[in-house]
Amino acid sequence: MVLALLASTAGAQEADDVDDNGSDGYTPSEAVAHETLRLTGYIDVGFAVAEGNGSSFAAGDIRLPADYGVDAFAPAVNSRGDVASTDTRGLFTNGFLPRSVGIGNRPSFLLNTGSVDLRFAPASVPVLVFMRLQVMPRFLPTGDATRVDLQQAFGRLIPFASHEFAVSLGKFDSVFGIEYLENEANLRTGITPSLIARYTTGQSLGVKAFYRLQFPDLWSALSLNIAATASGTRIEALSTPHQSLTGVPVGSARLGYELNLQKVQAKLGVSGLYGPRNDQTNREVKQLAVGGDLRLSLYGFSVLGEIVRLVDEPGIAAGKLTGQGLAELASGFTVTGFYVTAAWTLPFSAGHLEHVTLYGRYDHRRAKFEGFGQVEVDRFTAGLRLDVFGQLAIKAEYLVNREIAGAPNVPNDVFTSSAVFSW
Image 1 (cartoon, rainbow, N blue to C red):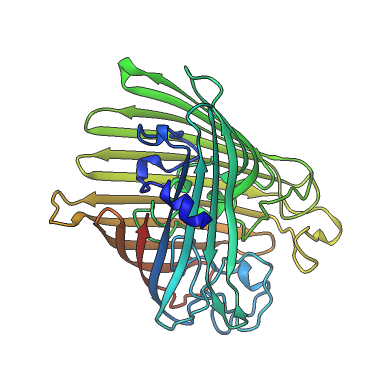
Image 2 (tube, helix red, strand yellow):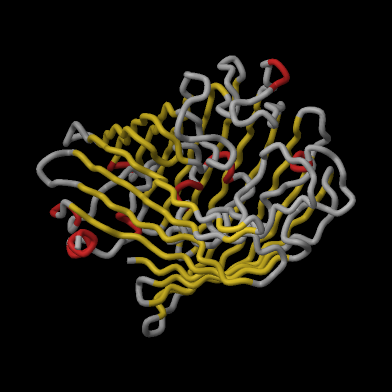
């Protein structure tokens, strides 16, 4: 009964009304401005098959920890970055692992995500309350591993009607770079995230502020997005987002510029992050990241790219034990990575087929753990997207993963597909 009542007040979810928590701010559409309560969401149903055993781990590679010598995140199958497998054939790992759907090399249908957004935005006060609840059904070799995640839960205050300024408090998206704007399957052009998404697209608990200054005569704007959070910007598989293990917040920010002409739009930004590592308990052990991003859109074509450099200081606690578990070490770590994505929406539609989009992406990542050799990998991704009925996105893509240096060559290419139903 309660869900039925909520659904009766909810409208269809539109891309320009999704709370992106960041570089573009949040501007309710005119229709939403008169609503107080909305229930929206999506269901992401996939089908995937991976080569090899579905992981990046090679038979015969006995280096330990096993996850320090490969890129376990490479064989991704969905928009969450879950991989086909993390099977190490029994070797010890240090926790630098993605989530897995556990299918190995077996072709399988997947229910990737069921996501529900609830927002309350009364027209009489400048407050928005937002909550995103997600269910990820999984069955692994160990049994049922279904997760329920309160991915976001925050309140936002817009104190000045004459300024584009907002303050948010709670659990929200990262402010670093731009890829977090496509975290969700219903917003992402393709299916899988980039090889650097694990460092920049996580949610965390804290406070953030956004300000944008418009220059109408120049068709331009400047924006600043800053945050102080418990864990920073990494995904929750790598760092707990729900509490600070050191007692000191992690600061992050992005400064952006945008040019909005009638047929050409350009956006660029620089990002930074500094604070204690939240995978251990010593506040003197720091993490540092810097990045840059660029987006261009013209005549149906779009190009976007992002680069990041991240450094983790080595742990200095006795034995370098972390706050995450007695078996894990706070090893020193450095990474440099980037991606470039190009997409073209074909200039036609046919009946209920509204858009046809071709896209491709190139990723490159070079990383090194303390005491290990450098691992260098890249990836080529090609895909097709069909938008039908305004509520269904059908996607298919192929990932070619390559081990360039420091990691054994393994068959870990992936074909994956996705049907995203939105309401």
